[in-house]
Length: 356
Ligand code: TRP
Image 1 (cartoon, rainbow, N blue to C red):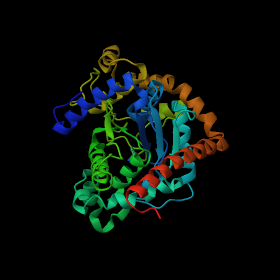
Image 2: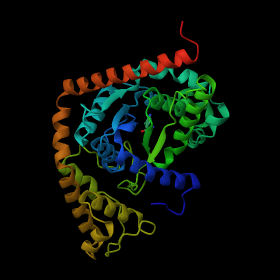
Image 3: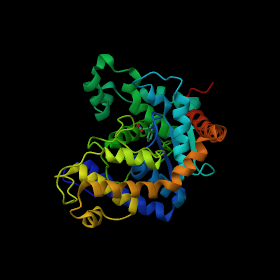
Image 4: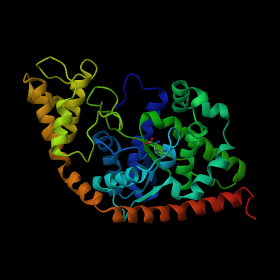
């Protein structure tokens, strides 16, 4: 739903996404989705309602789904360490538990698909330093850490993301509003590649953003929810851990609970989380609690989370106990992604006259 702060490009993206949803319903086989996450910690309920549930929905609708474990995006701002394999396999377990089906979807990792990464070089030649500098995420990063401290890979990461998408010849990328500029850069790269190297028959399709309708959940402390901020409920949390996490959540002192995202952001986010778990509206949840206050809200949220995620959690525990299976799933996905990316790179070489 559009909000007052939406820019014209976000509103245009929302309109386009509505049309895309209709096209998907008519002919799901015409779409191939690439999406992914950095393996920097366990996924949480914000990821579930924000993207995971949507991926599973699109997979069930018959769209081909590729899911990237973006390990080379981790090293944009930190070194990898011995804990990385556990984070990578943990992410795979989260995906499978949430309902991503490895027989239908391809789960793969950056570092295992050489041809994908090689595409970064020709793609970097298609965009200017000034264009990359205008990307909002890169700009923010530059302000936050200063260009002296920012790694070259961080600077190049929107172009690397274009390589992710185009290596797989994906034409649809489910994103949040903040990722629209990345998608626009991927489209520019596809267009310029075609203009320079394949003017008669365009080789790359320009990938499209599919904006999710999912509302933004705040962290339990009222700040942005983050994997490493300790303010989320991880998918894998036990019922007791969930109760402890929710008990610490920030609320306010008004007894009467109301859904008012602008005026009472913390309480409203807890209501929204409860409502999402129960497939209800946050207003209905607020009305049910009435003037029983924050304690009743927290009790209701704890129950709602524990009921909604019980099955996912028990599946996740089974997957997590079977490292061998998780590795097999990833190895099979890596192999499928390699076949795709190799074929793309071969065509790119041919079109660029670099096949000898
Ligand atoms: N940037 C995404 C994140 O931080 C992960 C990602 C990498 C991605 N490459 C992508 C998402 C390509 C969509 C498409 O979680």
